[in-house]
Length: 122
Image (cartoon, rainbow, N blue to C red; front, side, top):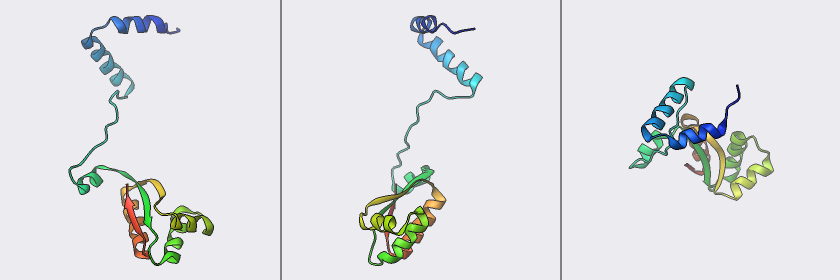
């Protein structure tokens, strides 16, 4: 059975808001989906915002004074070669990794800071 898209659109145009609401709920229940748009959570303080977020981008803001140590850690984190890792450190600020889980992001941030780098999690 083929869907007649034009008829479906025409029926939706004529439906009331309540009927459309019922349709959306029925589709959500039937197919296990949601029609809700993703909403960014904004916390009042930085700690609250970090707690609400589940993935982070690790941004190297400065290589610091111990660039060789930082380059080694950057190579370990990114899997890049020496030349690429050095370029990331020299061209800071630069994003080293995107979409990292919160626990791993904190661990990598600590490694970088221990090596002498400045890091922010976004």
